[in-house]
Length: 105
Image 1 (spheres, helix red, strand yellow):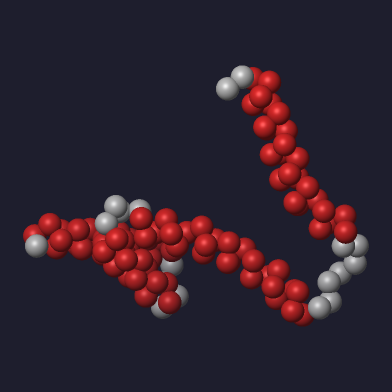
Image 2 (cartoon, rainbow, N blue to C red; image 1 turned 135 degrees about the vertical axis):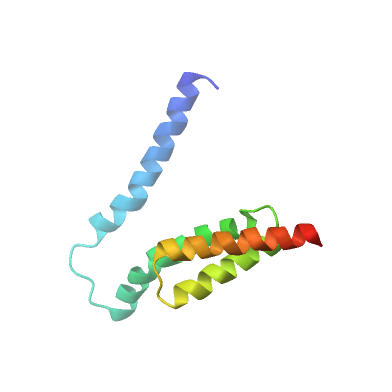
C-alpha cells in the first residue's frame, strides 16, 4: 500500500470516528431528562464490553469445552462479588483442569 493511499484511509477513518463522537455533543445542548434515554445511555458501556468479551472468551483456548467451563467458573465466582483477581485465577484453574481431563479421555 502506498503512503498516499494509507494517509487517505487514515483521514477517512479518523474523520468518521471523530464525527460519531462529536455529533451528539453538538446536537444536544441541554441535559437529558428522559429516564428511558438516560438508562439506555447508562448501560451502553456494559453492553459493548460484553459483546466484545463474550465471543473472545469462548474461543480463547482453542477448545470450546474448556473455554465454556472457564467462562462458567468466572461467571459463578463473579456473581458472588469476589474480586477480579480471584475471578481470573478461578477461570484459569478451571480451564487448566478441564484441559487435563480432556487429555486423559
